[in-house]
Amino acid sequence: HAFTTSATMSTNPAAQMDPIEEAKKRAAYKAVADHFNSNMRFVGIGSGSTIVYGVEAIKAHLEAHPASEAGHMIWFVPTGWNSRKVIEQAGLVPIAFDSLPADATLDVAFDGADEVDAEMNCIKGGGACLFQEKLVACRSKKFVCIADYRKNQPRLLTKWPSIPIEVAPIAHATVLRELKQLGSVNPKLREHSLAKTGPIQTDQSFYIIDAPFKQLLTKKDVQEGKDGSGKDGVWSVDALALRIKEISGVLEVGLFYGMNGDEAQAAGQQGGQKPV
Ligand code: 5RP
Image (cartoon, rainbow, N blue to C red; front, side, top):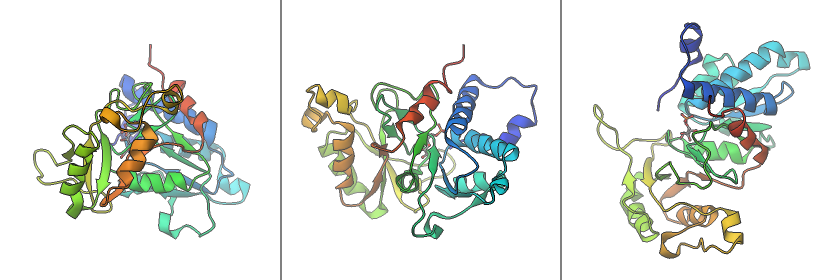
């Protein structure tokens, strides 16, 4: 999964920024401006290339408004190995998810997504980090998904082709079989390409299956009478997520739905709009 570091960008200010990178950056700065402040205590940081700009924006905010002036420090909760590195490289202080005080709730979790539908449901896991991302998101008062214009679609599986699912290695073949029974056409174990061979491993040393399905129905579709129960392979987001989670061997599914904080969508639509 490619990481664009702020260092690469700031050392060459004269270079014109790639339009997609610019959209990601704009979405991230907008999300942080709208949903972060120096009074926060615990902040989740997701994974991927977009969140790097989010961390850059948080760092800039804290330089202008130090948390120490508010008399405390902010702990940043990573969602994986790369996420922790991004936090550290920005000079922010990480705290492992399992070191959080038992009664602590995160003020906000920022993360990217592979696709976002009209109801702010997301496909995540393109970078193989979905389990820890969901742990952190579920422990946050608000989940802010930073999505540029390419990721917003009316329904999930419009452009992004498949749902990432994290599975125990020993169970991967049986999970593949069950996914086919649910209507997934040609689900595949994610493997390394070229130099390295074998399945990609997550931060939990699990595997990822990418499962294509037909476009997923939203709540609104179901309210309007469409059948999302899996008949003919047509599923609604929540029905499919719950059904996949029931398969023995599945650790987590890369469908995020019903998260707190739907105003976050604005960060994608306004902040990351298509550059003209
Ligand atoms: C990693 C993720 C990422 O948030 C998602 O893949 C988006 O990445 P990017 O910002 O690079 O497009 O879920 O597993």
